[in-house]
Image 1: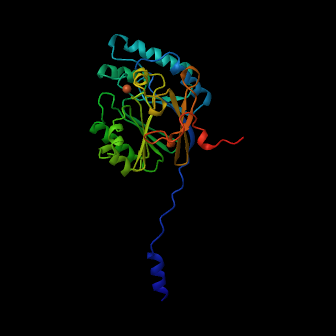
Image 2: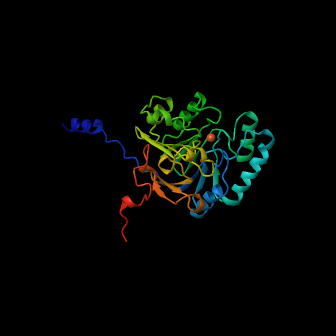
Image 3: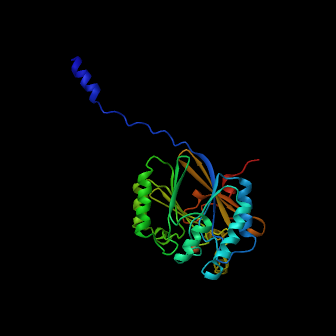
Length: 292
Ligand SMILES: [Fe+2]
């Protein structure tokens, strides 16, 4: 009897160990496209606001120079890296956009001036950031997906996991309710909850199968054509930057529209936007019934 109880104790199913919440407590800021056709004073205003908020680091989503001009390529990098040096005091990560990289020479200069390769990953506390390159292609090439899987496999205990690349090729399929693309399968498999892109000069966000896809819009790039077509704030056309709060395994994004000559200073939680804003675009605070 004693022996049977001992065996039952030894071989009884053990409860799964409780995973402690990842020890994260930091902020970072995201900058949208500066180009094409950088608008006067807009990018500098976004940088000024970010500097005053003092994040732990800054990450831009690409298109930092106008590019596509070999003769002016280095001059344009010197201009923007000078702006960064004067206004960004924190660690600054870059992503390659189609205005930054269009051939092998421009790719070389991108790395020379930003200090980053086209694809890389980094960790901050217990969070993993994977940066991929689709500057010269709309979708992510197989090499990019292989790199993503290798980094996710190499960092299984890091939470949260965030993936960045410039062109939001996911926009059209997700808008149609389609999730049958390779990236989505990888993200669901590895429980990657956040994707951030840029490029479209408009704020975009969709959530599918627990993955929140978001495009940071313009932090200086031209929106004139969209505005002429009648698009506005509700279509994501407004100058902004995005603030990220990472606490434990949670990520919260707050979208900040510029004020003054750059907009109306509207501030809202990214989660209140799924395909379209779910709040009063004239006054995002009104649904919270602000008390006095
Ligand atoms: Fe772009």
